Length: 528
Image (tube, rainbow, N blue to C red; front, side, top):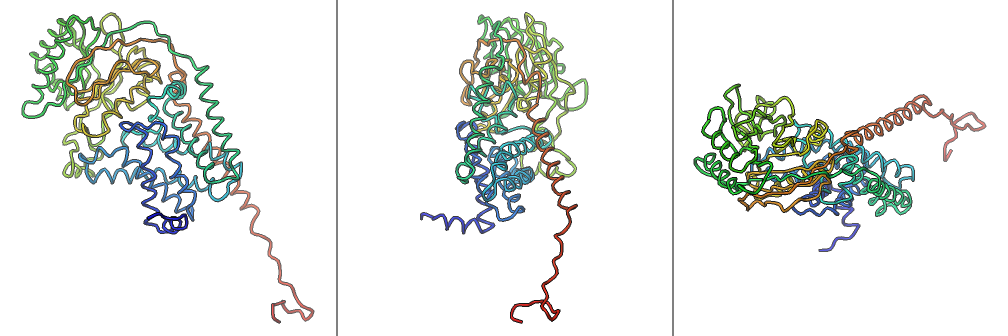
């Protein structure tokens, strides 16, 4: 049955229909991310949500539409958590979705009805700034981290990667929201099309300027990096079987002149100090392939209490002493926030039964002939600041050791692998994303793909010729400047709104006009 415009307006008058429409509209941007990877859709994906919010009958309803759209967005980008966290995924999405309520309120504030040219111009700056604040707050590790930032949908678009080198993923998110706002105005408000078109032209000009003038990394060498991906190994004795499979795949690299071999997250399930036999086997492998091996130990440590996830470098003589303990842990997956309050999550899903311990600092390791590498573990590749700090500390090659075996049949492995392209482009440093079960991927210093992905069906080792580059990107030098610019824009908005409110209060109520009187000194009334 085809619904007319009047039918749609009537249905959207119902809170239930409107709420469902908001949830669906908020979920649409997920199609821009891998695996669908419809990157172009990100430039219009927010338009239905914006059009819905601007039509809200009240400011409170607009805030509700923002909240429900945020719930839909968070559910969509984290849908792969449902088998692990069950109903708790919805609870988290509902809590984080509330971050979009102010964004909804601001959308109606600037775009409701027939906005003036000034309101449209303001909206092109204010709404992207408010969106960036949402992304900033939810990027805190304790709230789930920066998974599904809108700008990360552009991981495979060369002009967007150039912009990432200037302002990181934050600049991409800002510009994408601005484009969506301009398109929404073009669609809905004919009288305000001139400033909307001007906004689109300005965005295109900024992209062109970044393409032409931003510095490019200077490629000045190459290294051969091998990635070992054992594939899914389940059942009794899984840790021993996985180690044996990784051992077999690593032996195949002998004679291939590799500079470093990288295993995935949790590739070693035993503390090497407690298992000298495994340390000896790794040292023998290092001698056989004539390269250091970076493994990841997921085990209770013998020298301090607790379970750590640690990148450990092993050379021909055994562990070299270079070790990085994972600092940012996955909420519920590796620890339960406020366990005394939320510990019940372990009874309804696969939340961590025991909290992992945190490392205290990032580490740059020296490998082979002076190559300096910056390791991260899994979830940490989503944090732009971590790769930026490693690059500034001298890392020539970024590495992420990951495992997404619990989510093999979802979109999570492809989306996780894509994040390394952005980290490479932001820092001007190549990045290797090595996993246990796929997707493993390698990217050059401009964010370009190097070689082919190892998919979730692969159990193999692969060698990549990785270009090295030097020089400092604007993002590496200046950091999260788009976030600071957004904060400034919102501060100016707050000051302007506050001054306006103060002027209204000082003006006081409208002067009282006494009623007209007749010649008999009685108030004039109709009909008297």
